[in-house]
Length: 314
Image 1 (cartoon, rainbow, N blue to C red):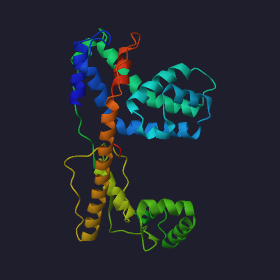
Image 2: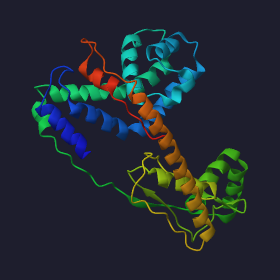
Image 3: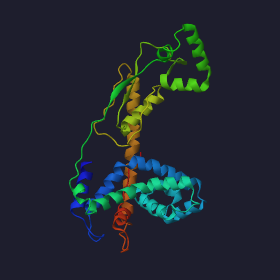
Image 4: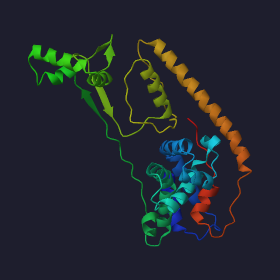
């Protein structure tokens, strides 16, 4: 975030005209923001990819594939930075056409929004009217708000409204006979010996509300825990590896600790292998990338078109 703050200041204080004046801050700004937003961009790309692979015969889908020079058989290796630019250009040309599939248009717009937003920000930073604002921008980090929130037992809540023990048991049986209600209760309170934990009074389940998403290692660890009987819900992950992450130690369960460590090492080995393969492909592709000589090309489109980004493949 500090680097992005510095890029915007430099762009505002040293505006440039045209692509002939190579501005490293614009390229660095684009690169760092796109890397920071990679997880969400990849999620939106997956939706667009389904449109492309499942509806290849659609008129507008086939036009876009041709326009963006997408190899459908190798679509997972597409450069997402360049794809956002192509989505932005293609969306501008078809958004007013009434026959465009709405879902495809919406997915196209979301991927295009990354390039469009960055383009608007850079243009504002270069605009004389907003120059002082960007030149004096200050980053303020706010501490996340976190608190413990207890999940009260089902019986604790229901008995407030049905104090009679007999009526409570009848109500409980009725709820458990309903498969929809039973599944919801099972997901919230958990199960031991095929019995939903509805009547516990001495066990305190707790939920921690935080504003941050999990790192890749934390997400992988929680997935392993859930696969082994735990019930942990997270808001999402940012797919990055936090350098200070430590493996939790579950007291009295050495088997779980050992298996979780082996699981994480296996996942990391795969990440390293994928990144090594991507590095080889990156070196080969660099020799094929060349700068555009079109004098009418927008300078921001020029930077985004010729900047090669390779993202981690988690």
